[in-house]
Image (cartoon, rainbow, N blue to C red):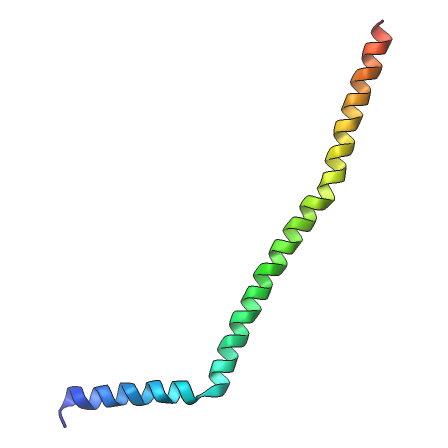
Length: 76
């Protein structure tokens, strides 16, 4: 066998060993799922923040409109 053939066999053996290592594959999959969950959690928090701010913004707009109506009435 030549050196390149030996290297190919070593690489293929390492690939087979990596496929057979179920713990490592499970850990990698769990890490990926954890990352996805963290991203989804961040998106949910951001959307909840927007939902919480919505009533405050609506109240502010209502206060400005009511204030402008009151000011106009007093000027008459």
